[in-house]
Image (cartoon, rainbow, N blue to C red):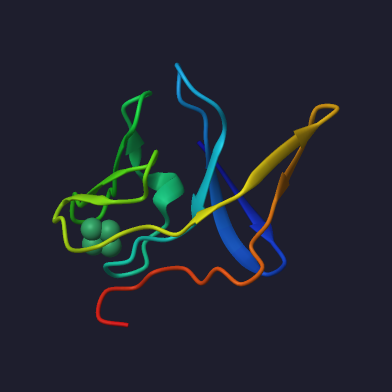
Length: 96
Ligand code: FES
């Protein structure tokens, strides 16, 4: 995983072993800890390092707990450059 900022929006790029690059919001919807500090299982489960919430990065859906989600952003790769479109997609926060 790697943390970046796109148009002022913190994002994390995730590189699944068996998939394509995924862009997700850069902070946890729970208490906004950096998700780049979390643990990724290499396939789809990202675990926040703060309070161990887990997410499926392939869908953005919360696994534990299930009533939360991550914003995912479209990714385009052209000539080794990665483009992430964050326009119109707000990061998710619990209770917001
Ligand atoms: S801030 Fe991520 S689980 Fe609490």
